Length: 281
Figure 1 (tube, rainbow, N blue to C red):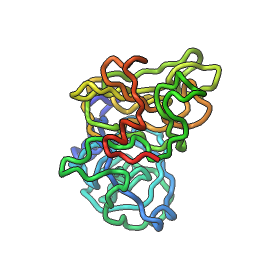
Figure 2 (figure 1 turned 90 degrees about the vertical axis):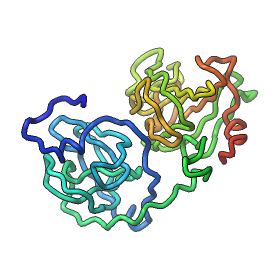
Figure 3 (figure 1 turned 135 degrees about the horizontal axis):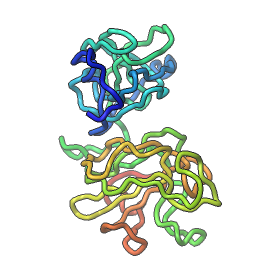
């Protein structure tokens, strides 16, 4: 487990709560009552990375990671297995605003009593295509605000989905992560870009078994996936940002019929997703 340091006295339960991203985010939606009672917290792990899990237990699928000092928004709590962490020993798990769970043993937060989490609800953005889940999903729950190769933007090889910063970006399909890069002409991908900056900023590419490749641009920070990692449709890969050639938070999403992704093999993502049965507004 690649971490900054591991304390010799850490319990097995504590270490089980920490690690690296390997899977997809749980489909969970907080109720209005939960959202209204959300509180902010700070990850405190003593320098390790904290696992975000699909359910309130260390044996649940890992769906993301949080770094030491990361800010989180907690909407409710659920009881799970007991964990001894760097902040407290507890059997409470915090459901975050994006649906994942972390052990409250590693979260510094106000002494506020949070509501009990409602049972998980299916996401309306996902279609039902059997037990294995949908083959394709919309990468960001947002409406399209810029289309593929319009007369005004003939070199725009994707579609833009405008959403607030930190909005989860998910894999549109199952496949293997091929590239994770920072692409800017000047400056850094860790700050907002602008019209004077060229490039995708932080971006990732995923290729499936048919060779179809998707690209996700202008992410807020380095994507939480790595080249060679296998992902499933709906897995969390990053957050909406405005890095690179961008004037506001949005996801620039491209679909290519082959790898490597080029101008020549780019196709209209709106029409492609429609053909796959994915609703796009």
